[in-house]
Length: 144
Length: 186
Image 1: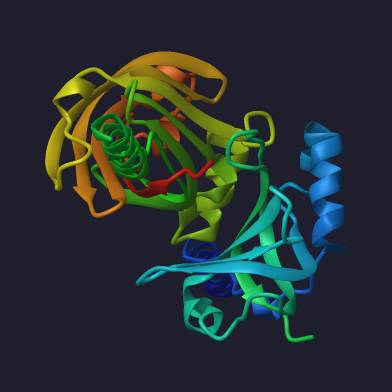
Image 2: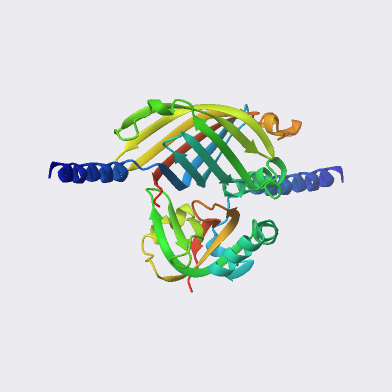
């Protein structure tokens, strides 16, 4: 009887230990496999932050957002890429920093292209000099 | 005749000066890393979406970084960083406003790497502190590469380390800044 109880306790400890280990080493999941919590167009998202940045931060901050917009430009670096969505001629944009696994895909994106990008919303950089931007991280191109 | 030629020559020279001497440089993809080394663990995170502006005339420099933009290898660490340590829902941004104290030593129109010392105010977690950092400014064609490494203490910014993780997170954090800035037109 005692042995059986000990074995059960051991089994529970092992299972808990396994889950703790998995949770500790859990990597940020590739957003291609995650459904967005919010879907919105780039102009609407920018407007929300320009009207009330604190409120928009509470509403969208940290959430997985799918942004539909037109590509203003693409910035490429050796190991990083940023796709910028927005209406040409405006100072404000949505800047999507691509997930390291998706950097190569950004090279195929053209200016003026209509695109939906999924990312984790980091916040809003309000800047009169440089133009205000909504920033998304870990971005993936959502296949339309 | 000579006066006319003189005026033309002067305006040509002036136009060239204004074309070469760009006053302000900026980036929206500056890289900021922080590194903590503790007995049981090393932790590092990178933010690739920092905004920076440098005024070459005055040496004024400004950085702005969204705390949620720091990316960690372990998702749990990133969540703890945001929810418990920097409380990014309350304090979404880290900011630095300062000046390059030896700005007059930097020859912005001559390619080369120049040492720079920056003094200013760093705001993290709602707390502002004076910071002095050393680094380099590299003039490379029409780009400016500004780099710096400096240390901060988490306790200076009201960021508390629970005793449970004392051996996993150091109070002393190394911050590395790397920016590739282009001229701000207009």
